[in-house]
Image 1 (cartoon, rainbow, N blue to C red):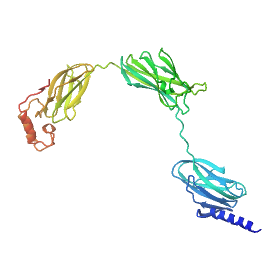
Image 2: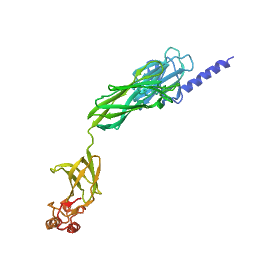
Image 3: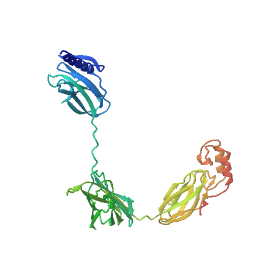
Image 4: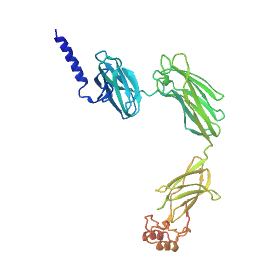
Length: 413
């Protein structure tokens, strides 16, 4: 008859040894209560412990970044009602909970203290689980994009109206109300993308009149819009120079006979004068960077550019007749004439600049050669370094000699 009580004592001792085993560290006294430090590696592991009115257990908690977490102490014997306390690094209480505690804390050092809520002690199991807070759903919205984003007067583009952040449960119907300034824009060719609402969606349009129109789309046979995408398109024709907003607002239905307005993002259309510019291209050969200029009849500059290292260039200017020049440091320039036509590319013939006009007076002569002699084996002046190798010597004189007595500018026709 004594075997059963002895067996119960043995079981209790086994539980206590498990609770106070390798996890137990140095103890500290707090009045008549013994505070026992325990080891803790956080997130999802299960720990066991024992507390009563004379013994509390304290678990260190170290966070390297902010966390949302829940601490749960579940009694496993003795009728224990565990109380969970969250303490800061100085053991000051932050919060408490009966059996469970949920908290959000920044990075830092903390303690989890377990103690009995009543006078009854016993064993418990402890878990700490991170609470993953899903990001809030983005609110649905409607937006307008323009292709192209700007137009010339009389030009036509396409406006694309799209839904975004459509919820998983979807929308059974959407009503779009679009507005624009009819003095700037003319709207036509409204075309719904019925695929957004599944096969064979129902579409109704009203307008456009007085700068607005309505497009309503509803799924049929139980179909819904369940993904982001373009709902419909329409054409816009530019009427006058300026900037004008185009916006489409939307109200959605989830099939509950209620229309809810969603966010919207307007777009601004820029309307410019008709392009009356033409383009001039060509190739200028020289050992230096070449500048190409277009000059008006009064010799003022209409446009200019620096040719690429291979001598090719392209520049645009209003249609009309120009003088075109090419120049490079230490070279005779080239000059010709050209006429640009609206939206037409005109190509100049390839021209090679003559090396040797170091003083820039339009003649290659002995004075240019003297400059080479005065600066022999020097890198400057750059105009005398005709082969652009950072050293003025006989190789530059050789280039000059090939064009000796030549007068510029070279005819560029």
